[in-house]
Length: 477
Image 1: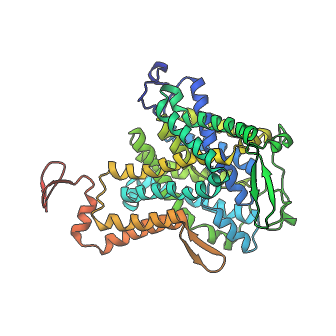
Image 2 (image 1 turned 135 degrees about the vertical axis):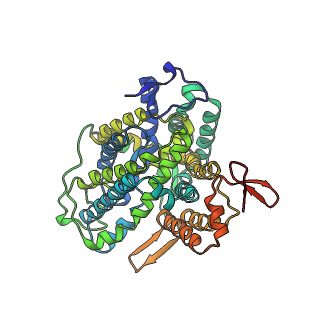
Image 3 (image 1 turned 45 degrees about the horizontal axis):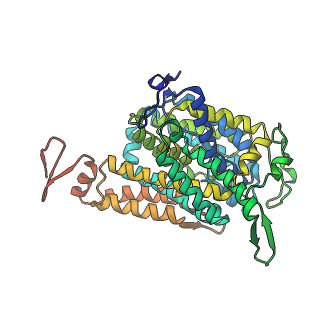
């Protein structure tokens, strides 16, 4: 299925295409790095949504295999738990819903995304290009990456700032200094180094001291394996009866369950489809920019496959999936786009889903280590948006391009919220995406014809003062 890249020889600056692979030993190493990149978020987001993280990890592997099959291994991607629905879950629970109502609403979102993908596939990628031109997709990719910055700043980094800073330096040093295959797995090596360094800090400096709001002082090891010791080696999430479930209760164990369908919950969740379409489009565009392949024919397949993956995951009680920005960062760092590595990552994730023990080991990764790694990875994701702009020669001297991107990025990065009633608000990536898309088309509708023509000319080049020419050096009016 995959052609061996360059007879197994990996040149320092070589790009490994999606349909190529390295040796299986190296491919397994890269697959492990993709597992590391996706695991933290795939584990955390279900917890925030009141769903089972072990089940989410397992179904993320299943959804990824479905995705890769649907796109004929031409679009490398990992489908992990989506962050877009954390606010949706909170709103549904606050309105009296339970996890079955949530997964039912998310199933409908997946179904809608699947149907949109089919429309794009049969109508052609030009539909999405017209709706989401490079200035928009670049902005969406950028706000998705930079929206993750507060996760680093408020969750990972503050736990142990100096350890996070050292790990960041390790990531930078290994990414720049290492060559060949070792340089390609620099992120994974940085995680191992950070894990070991955290254990040394515990031995030499002692545990961290935490002071609660009420003045209570507690100590916490950077590497805490108590959960690993208590976890079973093999096991599935339990089948859950939600009859006695109550929002906010700490003893709820939500595992396998069938969704139920509430119109109120569905209405709350459906607007996120817009963000998911743009997110998937941005992902395919970003991969196309990195690989140099024309992936437009795969656009509809990719969007439909993400919808199908979400449907499969939610029908058994897990959260929806999405193409993972974290893994785009890994691909950008390694320049290895082989889908063989993603198949390995998916199989490993499914095995993790059968083993609470191994999941506990990964989830015990110190927060400061994740902080040091993600501060680099998330920044790389955001800057891929700038690369899309550069490669498509987006002219930010034109207000049609400038204004929508400016507004959307600030909303996305600042996590600006727009409330709808007392129980639901739209914000962050979702609102930033909607504003970017909506304001762009509004600006085109009301702008003078000259500005619209200039915005359409992605290949317009500046030739001399006051004179614009096209690719054939013919003057433009």
